[in-house]
Length: 156
Image (tube, rainbow, N blue to C red; front, side, top):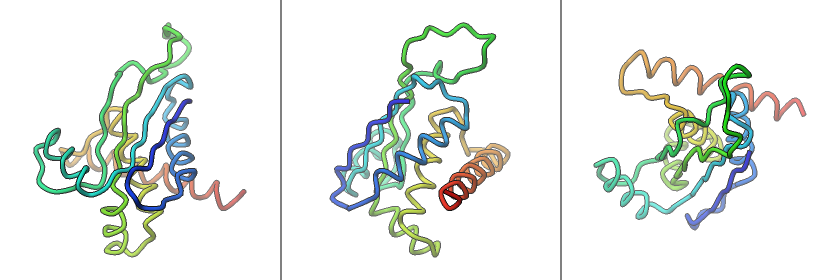
């Protein structure tokens, strides 16, 4: 899986860990190994601009996901694939917003960025949380992925 990451936020973050959690979540979700993903870390002003332009929101948000190709999920050997790399989409993270949320939640900014990365990846795969049932499903899956990723990191 090809994952590109660019930190344009001005905040120092562990991009290797963000790449690792993204790769783990997408592997666990059965995403085509030829899929491509882009992760961009931005400052508060740029995130506010993106949030306003694409979501109609006011102010900066923590994560935005921009899906590109619905056909990137590997549905098993019975489905004929094109063999072409699928462009999954873009995850945009705002480390400053994540840091504030992490402080309020009582965990590290790194943990918050890992959570937001998995959250963004699930959005790219079609998960949503607009309805209560969707929210329960998405957040349970998000928590399971994070817990198993963290367990694997501490076991190694």
